[in-house]
Length: 411
Image (cartoon, rainbow, N blue to C red):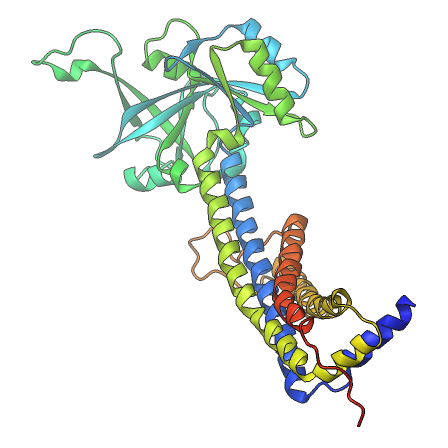
């Protein structure tokens, strides 16, 4: 019986469709296809840039970062480091001491941030993979201290890492003692260090941080105890970040704050996600506008099929059945367009990933083509959005169809 109703449904809805209705239906499918494709392409490009920025920040930021809740620095002992290193899921723990300082190279100077690190910092950050000039080395066999500067700092100070006779002069305000008005230069402690490498990660880092040895930094700040401003932790590839974060918090106590990658740059990630959702909403409105073609085609179909609807009612069809007929017709128009749009978006994203069809102009970027990253959640979300829009677009024509009362007239 249901099969007979299905054939009857398709027969009476499609039997006398005019060319105008067919054209509007085709436009509806094309509109939903283009809108779906554009939405997925833009979301995939946003994902690509998000992955790019995240990978750049991950070259400098650790998986977990431990800081004191009160004060700029805290004292750490070897037993704490040992306990942390032997927790499940932890790969390495690095001691870090940061402070702002005045840096001078030849006749140029600037205020930057010195980051004193130990030997394990390379295992935590992977900064050695970002070196674009020189090499990553902080000390040598002769106990000489070296600095690795950011690309932005090199440009501002004119640092020449090939010149072994020019050093980087560091001026750090003394933590203790009074400033003399007759000799204000005594308020600063001065040391020199030789730049040996240049890294390039991201502008926020490249123009701000200079990597120096941890002991050099402690001497510059006159610390007699093993003070650090943070402990940076790298996790094993299969480790659960949330579980390890909770374990570290329980080990260190309430006086310390443990931040994951998202929490270290929370504002940045919130901005990226907000931009993505804003673009999603804007392009969804375009899909809604495209869905008006579905409303138009179904409305014209309802007007033309008044006589056939009367036949269906004479055969015993109720309002619910007629409503379902036009609702399914709307879902069909939207679903076909949405599926074709998702298929085209998938093909274009694959082509962009492998052949780099759309390239970035200029040679000042880290990448030469627009990055794309497809995520199954985006496809699921866009598919649900298309179906919901198609249902809403088909509801009003379907509701109008149930109000048609023209019955079959015997000639």
